[in-house]
Structures are given as C-alpha cells and as structure tokens.
Length: 411
Image (cartoon, rainbow, N blue to C red; front, top):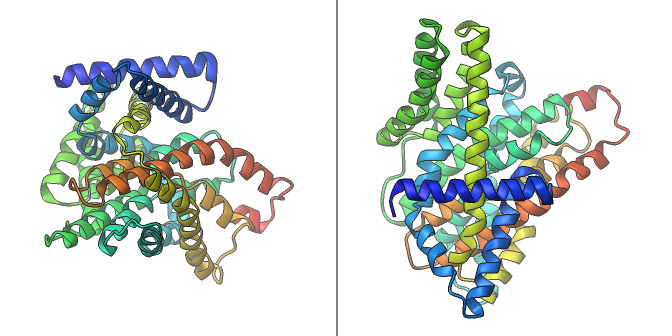
C-alpha cells in the first residue's frame, strides 16, 4: 500500500466520522471521532467473530501505518507548533514556576509512582513484568497530551490563569515525557539516551529567531506560510537527526512566531491567513489522529487479564496525577495563592491521548509490549471519552459561585 493510498483512506475515514458526528452524534469533535472509529472497529471485530472477514483489511492498513513515526515524527510537530501559536508568552511567563514544576518534577514523580504501582499490581494478577518495563509504562502514560487537552479546553470555561497552566503544562510535559521515555528505553537496552531536553529548547529558540528574521524581511503570506511549514517539517527532522527534543523545539518556535513574529514581523493580512491556515492544519491532523486511535483496537490483544490490568490502572494513574500536581502546587503556596479547586481541575483535565499510544507502539516487539499497549489503550480511551465528556460539567460545578477574589484570580 502506497503512502498516498494510506493518506487517502485515513482522510476519507476521518471525513466520514466527522460528518457522522456533526450530523447525528454531536459530541465534541475529538471525542466524537474517536468514539465513532472505536465503535466501528468493535463492529468489525464482532463481524469477524461471526465469520465475516472484514478485520484483515483494516489490520493490513494499520500495519502499513508506522503509528510511532507518523505521530512522533510527523503529526506531533505540526500540532504543537499550531497549538503554541495561540499562547500568549506573557501569560505563560506569569505561570512559569507552576508550569515548569508540573512539566518536570510532576512528570518524574508520576512516572515513578505509576511504574512501581504497575509493577506491584501486574504481579498481583499474575502478569510478571520487569520493573524497568513498568517504569517505561509510567513514562509514556504520565504526560498530558497537548492535542487532546487543546481540543477539549476550548470548550470549557476556566479562568485565564488556569487556562494558561493547563495549556502550558500540556505543551511542555509531553516533550519532557518523551525524553524520559527514551532515556529509560535506552537504559533498558543498554543504549544511551537522547540529548537533554534543554538543548531542544535552545534549538527551538534559534529556529524561531531565524524564522522571525525571514518573516520580517518579506510581506507575502504565501511565502510566509511556506516558511512556517519549512520550520515544522525541516526543523523537526533536523532536531531528530541532532538527537534533541523535536516536540519542545516546535513549542518554542511556535511561541516565538505567535508572539514576537505576530507582533513585529507580519502584516494584518498575513496574520489572518497564517493563523487560519494553521488552525485548519490542526483540525485536519486532529481528525486523522483520533480516528487512528479509534481503529487501533483491532490490533490489541484483548485478554481478560490485560483488560483487568487496564481497568485497575485507571485509578492508579489518576491518583499519581493528583499527587504529581498537588506536591508542586503545595511547594509554591508560600509565595502565591491558588484557587481552592486548582488541584482537582488540573487532575481531571489532564487528558492522555495519541502520544501515549504512539510511545507504547514504539516498544520493541515481544515481552511486555502487548500488555502495556492494551493497558495504555484502556487508560487513553477512558481519559478521552469519560474525562473529556465530564471535564466541563466538573469544572463548572467546582467553580459555581466562585467570586473574583484574589484566590480565584490567581487560580
């Protein structure tokens, strides 16, 4: 199957799922696409059990899609750049200590808690997995997904400062999580990990500055859109070649372009066209990604013990998320105020998504991979469907009647 045929099939499936959702289901787009794709996949599995062999063509399609490379080296850079374009860097700077701690110490703490708990829980139900493999699972499931979070948070009414925390953390902690996962994976196989995440931030700043200078030197929106595309594709590919964090680099480049570039290097016409273009790219890639997540169920090993492990790990992951949020915030309470429900909101709005699935799929074949992949899929499905559908009512219920006092304004 050629790359064009794969793209054609995925685009068609995404368009049909989007139409069905808009016409009949009317769920939030991200959730609706995944639910429709998931139900369709389960229907195909059921038909296969009845003797109608529809599952093989879908399995061949998924085998043809390198999900790891497609997401981590293709879609992710574009999505992170598009998401960062709309973030005000001044708002981000005002929350830098909270975001920095959540994206670093929070991810590390969650990785350790989930890894050790999984090691104990898997052994308790008769699934003996080495501790290093469990820590790998902790690293891949701990970061909140910026794509899933970004698609949901726009539908939820929260204070500006809290929105900045949610957005900023999700943009940065996935890059930290990917680096941590790769370091643990290299350690597990006796290899060296990638260059420190800080180099990715410096690389992204350099790329963003170069893009700014080039945008400032011309006034043609077609050329300027092409330049941003070159940064997202060529810049990400070069980051991968240099073994620096491509995700973090694209976040920094997007922040640079959406703030300094927008203010000083673009005409009004260019700003409108460029931001509309990246919004459309983001919507298209989101649709394809969540359809892919939905259909991935056909390649899972749906053993009873694997599904039980996944169900039991849901509260463990949520508990680890709460602790990894609560401890950094408590450490900062001496110097600043927070709204009463910030820990609960950050815990429940921390959705897992395609990055976790892609990292699980990147594990070497054999060993604990089938178990980790199934458990990851169960948690991601719960996160996107259950948390995604309830995060709005949950936040509105918690913040109902909250006044505009100092604590509420700080969030």
